[in-house]
Amino acid sequence: MRRRKRSDRRRVRRGIYVLPNIFTSLNLFCGFFAVISSIDGKFIAAAVAILVAAVFDLLDGKIARATNTTSQFGIEYDSLADLVSFGLAPGLMIYLWALQPLGRIGWLAGFLFMACGALRLARFNTQAGSSSGKYFTGLPIPAGASTAATVVLFSHRIGFQGTDYPIVMLILLYVLSFLMVSTIKYFSFKDLELFKRINFNVLVATILVLIFVAAQPSLALLLFWIGFILSGPINYVRHHRTAAEEDAKSPETENHSSFSI
Image (cartoon, rainbow, N blue to C red):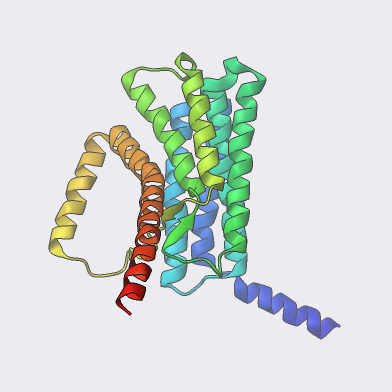
């Protein structure tokens, strides 16, 4: 029995890699900081912390795959950190920033966002080995949280307060919640390698995009996340339209072939 316990402990120790889990811990720290900032009424700091957490969440996966240090422990730890940083933190931030005047309807919308994010993470973990790595099923929870954070930053830039349009933010949370638990496919960006040679023109275009982000960060991020969110339904409609056209053409082809015979 003691030998089995020792072997199990060694397996657990071997399964815990330091480098990617450090970035996951930084993700979790940013999420907790966003919660504290929202409670203190510092919504800009909370929004920035959520965006920084999204960067750490992207890096921990990239580093784990690049260094071949992926593990089940890392997957579960990453999901727990994501629930705090991209479920609890943005839901609480949007409620305190915009939905508090709505009372029960407001905090229920924040809870719905967090609950749908948790369901999205649970479904992702159960389908991790069977689903295609090129696309995500449903809107990724970091994208939903980053969209909410970017809306807060852009509203602050143009001089709007969240309480000026609580119904708009209520609808936004409902839409993001629905997209997270939907079956709409979203591009995963896993094919984009950080440690890979790229074309010179791509590098120049990347630098120009970064300059635009540095000049107008809130506007650039808002346009990016709106485009990403709309890409899922657009591709969904295109796919079903193409499938319908192929189904409509197939009987004609069969009739033509049978007539020629």
